[in-house]
Length: 182
Ligand code: AMP
Image 1 (cartoon, rainbow, N blue to C red):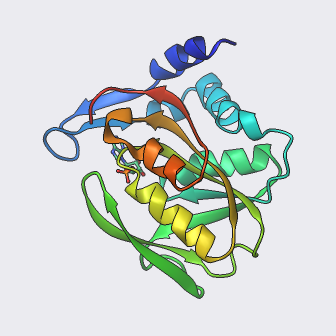
Image 2 (tube, rainbow, N blue to C red; image 1 turned 120 degrees about the horizontal axis):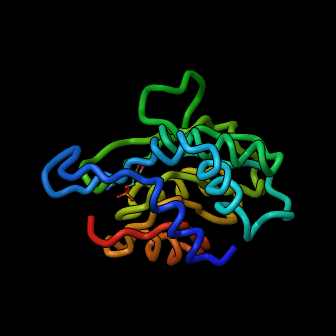
């Protein structure tokens, strides 16, 4: 299927909530995409399409919507799954990194034994805005010696420059649907 058809079809399944969680933010709600069986399946298939057939050891998902997509992608490519979580949620020894969000500051963590040096990892989240979250996740993965093959997102907000920021770290970025603005 042509990429513009794919983008058009997936875009139609994403709901926009203006001024959430604060004024000026157009919240791109993917729960409507997840609830549509065809759209969910296509999004999962397409997210990692350029790396299909390559050896992928792990898929890392960012809490919380990245868990849903990343878990499905991991199953699809027969890889293990790594949860990257907000501070204080993981029970075992952790590595952590501070990061900035489009709407705030936070800290994220990963189990220090979640990745073995040299493992080939794909990062997944629902959306990339400023790229602060994904940058933090790439740093965590690299700190443990992961080879970050790609970062994949259903939604891109290109005006915020996040995808470009991650490409500058030397990580290829795949996104499926772009929206103007914030
Ligand atoms: P950023 O670190 O700025 O790239 O923000 C990305 C993270 O914040 C992702 O985990 C998204 O789920 C969430 N996020 C940021 N902006 C939006 C938005 N406009 N709509 C939905 N989620 C968003």
